[in-house]
Length: 333
Image (tube, rainbow, N blue to C red):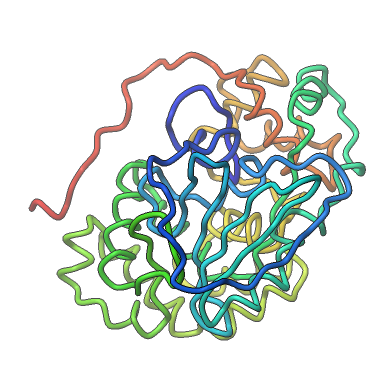
């Protein structure tokens, strides 16, 4: 689910309501970056908007600093780039470096939710209305990049969040390239399709990635161009094309378009926790399955993803009834 609630540092926290502040301080710039200012048409919370792009506290492509800046790297069609976003006066200032700098700045407004329309959302439950009132700066980001959301979503299939975040961190650090610009500590740009395709089998194993997930990524990068084309398609059509790749199902395709397209109505199905959370918050049913969840979200047709995210941001979740899933490190076998 792209965007979670805040109470504890799990998958839910790092993807939404709170972006932990890193300890690093930006180094002095080797050269000035390109700059663009953007004035949003309403409240904007950088943590809520960009938090879903962060894959764990050690994500080498994402960092925040004490001055409130959010840094992210991206492999754009024009090449690798680094983007720094921070509040400036009554708006937001973006500064970018690298071959992809101009591409990143051109799409800065969409990244910050300019293509999203929060006013189209009408709360139907008191809890949702209260969450919206408390978080007026929630906007749905749209990156326009598909693989950068698809690959980490594949890594998150059927494993614990910690395992997936570790795999992403290790693989990007080892096979990605250093981020351009005066980044606040070590940051990397994710590998390109060819670099993913050339990762040896033992490196997938060392990162804790089983053959099924590795094979799915390899199949995806072989058709990377066709998948990136989906950024210009409607979310439903984009999901259909993504799911042509064996190993990419509804859960993975939805997690992808929520970020790449800013899809307000694409609610995640097949998730281990989300149906129970939504069921408990909106219907008092902690054992709800996908069908019950979708029924409860039906009044929000067209805005179901936003509604689910507000439920998660409300922090109303059922108590844990079982131990956490154990972490298995296949790299140690």
